[in-house]
Length: 480
Image (cartoon, rainbow, N blue to C red; front, side, top):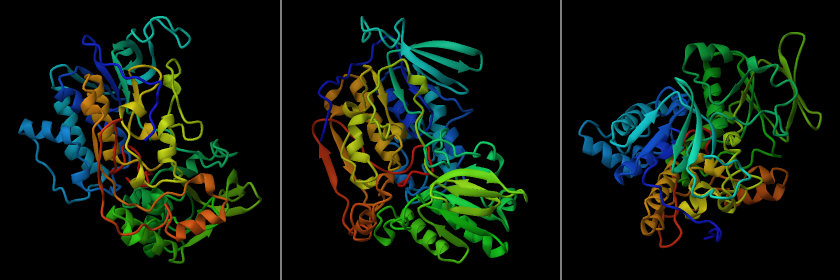
């Protein structure tokens, strides 16, 4: 395992709380560990309630069962409260069920914890060191963090002894444009473009796509969910058809590990998506990298690729190309990020989708997640940057390690146990022009269908860590 020789972890100053950005699954788990250890904390959530991002994909069913979606410390706190009914561990909830039966009850309990606070409608717009901008070295590590927030009562400045950024990536979907920026015309035609998975069971949503030509951009689990939904719609709504826009030279490993996928629901999704893609309503358009979206005289759209390909007469576009983290509010603190993924730098080689699936990420924890700004940690989906292979239990173990380190318990922080499910999902964008990468996927490489092996329990005795199971705040997570 690789660790940073220059990174150290300071314990939390006794007089200041740990500020946790985000009241999603990972942020609330961090607060649960802080509560167990008697550390003061404040959770800052931009949304109106707990799991606000999860609420935006509440209709999506997770790949993980309840046994993997409830953090251990959170479970202990909820069970001790006597007011929580634990869900059936074997059931696979929707995002809405996860939120209602676990996230909101946990947030309510944490808000009532002595020394704890959960604040909604409070957006963090800046994190820095009190009295010191980015360039000032003198006394930096000893100065508290200053968080600038916009809350219900207007702008505030809060002081904290440490910052755990669990803000995720949901609010920053990747654009349709292949350059990493919106395609020409993408913004102008935003009324015809949806980012994420529509709820096709909603009559109003179904009516939007019924009998229409829909372009779907993306390859991962979210794209597959969209194909399945549109195929079902097409059974009752004649004329519904799909152009599936893929940047790769073939569909390749898009459907994952199938029966060999130890995330059972992830395997089933891939099988259902394969059937949808073969149903006759879906036309796969490969090596298509969108450069522009233009209106036609009849009001429909033409989508053009950088190589001159065009998909015409498009009524609606659904973009499911993943998400990216927001670092704009961290511009006055010192970060060490991978230049390609935007992840914590030390994690990059372990999580890059060109080389790794969800189940073979190496152990990592407070040492890998700490930033050069002492006391600042990136956790959860945000720690993975643009890599889609994050699992919720990875985040749970991350924050257990981080909070133990903040409490000065390095023995616990550096001790981690993992159970890694084989998923057979990866093959990232870096190799999308390489035919050999597609061949490797079909041959059962890291991105192909894995062998049917037994999950291994791994105990790590020195730098800390993490492990998998369901997405933090993004329904596009390949393993969530």
